[in-house]
Image (cartoon, rainbow, N blue to C red; front, side):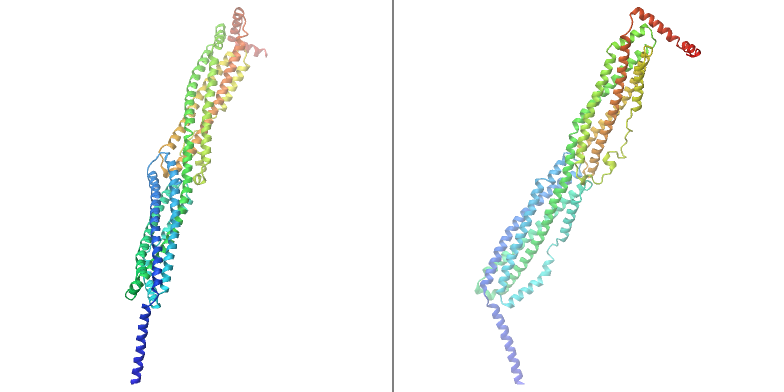
Length: 560
């Protein structure tokens, strides 16, 4: 019994001795290694803290740039700006502001990598310090680190949702078109602003952790070896905390590095794709602005053409009335016809008609310039803008517009040709009548010209209204409607061109009729006999004319 008690007491003594030895061992280690680890960790933490001050400043500037662009886009999209705002938006989205913001995001990415390096340096230093500790203390530190990980991990922001949001926004920018450019543009810079704030938040947290490491590592590097026995608990706690914070700094730095990579991609995609679309709209605005003067000139010329056509109606109507008064062939009527065609009336009518033709041609040239510029401008638009437009939209013939049928003067020209042929074939007995019918037809066709010119002028006026609308107040949420105006403008120009060409064809036919009448009357009147013979001839002609029905009846009976 006593031997068993003695053996138990001996075992207990050995266990006590082992505990004492363990405690003794825990209080005797190379404190110099721990102090050096604290010093190295302290230096790395100071560098990380200073680095974070720089990152926070850059992140703030990046957010300010993104917010400035966002605010402008919001103001423009919610308001009704004029077309000059397109250039402002293009310069914002694809200008120095975005380039500076992208450069800042790139800097943040590089700085986040440096933060990772500093955190690694801190961890390496603490690992080296721990290696110098007795196993019992090292095990205790590792145990505390593991217990605290779950608790502190819950305090770290999970950026997976942020990454997904930025990724989705990049895809939206890539697929942006005219229908979505405003919404996508505003959303892109909303995201850039909010994620810039997230970067600031993370770097602020890293800075706080780094400053904590600075304070804690200061305790480790400055403790006195003579104080080890009384400060083991403090040293253990400090080294554990430095390790944990260094690990968190590394993790946060890596996360913010991932986020800034996506932010850089978003800045670049927004600048490239959205800038391309806004730039194209700005170019379209410039193209339309270049059409203002040609259309103003064309409208002025249409006004002049309208006045000339009105004058031609009056002049040819007067000539026609005077010829109607000369249909009875006698000495007085032939003299009146000769005087009419010897006067300036017919030459002036022909000259005025030629001048009208020149005026219309000049107006037409202006419209053709406009059509060419707008067509080239539209064709130069990127596919992202043209996508979604129907063929009807592209042709400017949307069902919401009412367009008259194309002008067709072919039958009118044919009638004038018949008048011209009748004049050319007429003899002395038929010349005046044929010329009268010819000028009657010319007068009617100049009235038609006047009506068609009114239609042509209205097309040009619509062109001016369309340009004014395009260059005026914009609803950026309906930007496609503006591009439809470009297509409509081309179609209006083509309708004006078609009508103008028909009018010019009709004018040419009128001039040919008037010229034939002039030449026919001149050829007859220039070969007149002296007055006495003329009286006899006119008397005979009058007698024949008055008894023409009787003569025809006799000829029929005689089968002549």
